[in-house]
Figure 1 (spheres, helix red, strand yellow):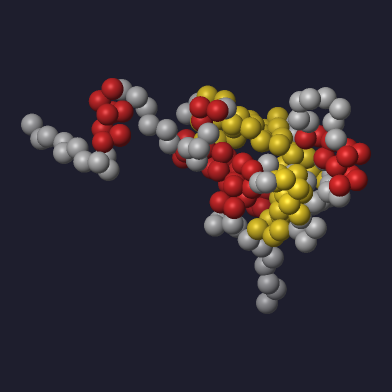
Figure 2 (figure 1 turned 60 degrees about the vertical axis):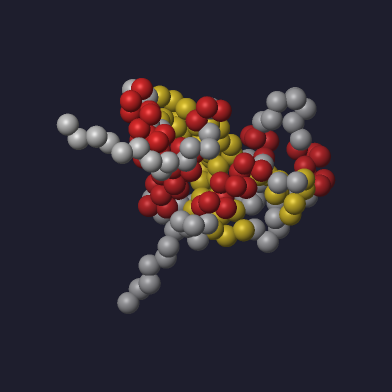
Length: 171
């Protein structure tokens, strides 16, 4: 019987296989749409969602969440790529929220590797790790009164980042 050689590179996957633990695989990510929410599934289990709105020829992402135990595994990035690809294929542009958290910033930096991401000329830092296109006055005026963050109060404002469909040249 052939023996498997365990090295530092394959040790984790060897142990998971030996213990019967399924590998986290971001390629098993898919989205299911319901109104303005795209539910994120991984290995058949709902693990998060992307809230969005469509206006004119743009789909603007208002908020996204991944359950804590599924974060930092590429699942959110894969879900965003699928979401963005669908919008671009239908001819729509994609826009980020008007205020991005540190996690949102990190995700959009990753998306630069795959897409031609444009940053708004109006984007500015408001806090360590946070970008916004809103003026200080607008932020104060629109700030939700509740303690819980509600991204819907930002809807319709200029996104920090945008991705546009490629234009085909006419011969």
